[in-house]
Amino acid sequence: MTTHVLGDTGTLTGRSLRHILRSPDTILTTVVTPIALMLLFVYVLGGAISTGSDESYVNYMLPGILLITIASGVAYTAYRLFLDLQGGIFERFQSMPIARSSVLWAHVFTSLAANLVSITVIVGVALIMGFRTGASVAAWLAVVGILILFTLALTWIAVIAGLSAKTVDGASAFSYPLIFLPFISSAFVPTDSMPGPVAWFAENQPVTSIVNTIRALFAQQPAGSDIWIALIWLVGILVIAYAFAIAIYRRKVS
Image (cartoon, rainbow, N blue to C red; front, side, top):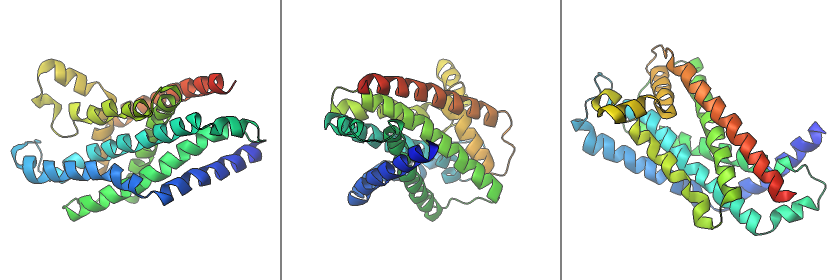
């Protein structure tokens, strides 16, 4: 049974990946906004922003840009899932001897692969702009692990949006609040520079702990409690989003 599910998921993931390979502009569109934000913040606004540390501003803001990149990328998952649902692909799959869950997992793994490519592009651009880190291999693996968890959590939220949306615009519009969330966090400025209520929200929302953790890993500093708070947020969101997505999917295909 497990082999059957894995085989079906692999086949359907290959199908989804071929869509992206035929439309490379999908990834290009995803990275354009984060790159533009990096250029804007580093070369236009960076000189006026005090981070309270000696590190370069590109080092400071890169973790937030990586999260924005992922938030932008998962919108494509909701879009593709909505089109498959409206195009009758799910009904066709139901008439075939394939595992039902493999249809959703194929979209999730495609999102993960596409976002890892986008993140690699962003890190490459950041290196050209002056990003430097002495992080060890273990620290880099920890960063990648956190970004994978973040991608999976947001992708399952995207699955919910793709299954629930009434229009194609609505399928991808859910990502706008997710893209905006890093701006009300420690991603671009320290939270203590914000007004009281805004600072409280920034300090207690998931993006801040995730950003602080990645920033500490890049800077070879202890992440402290931030890494545990980040993991609790990520695992919690992932489990809840997965449960809701599966419940909605079962109602759709029943």
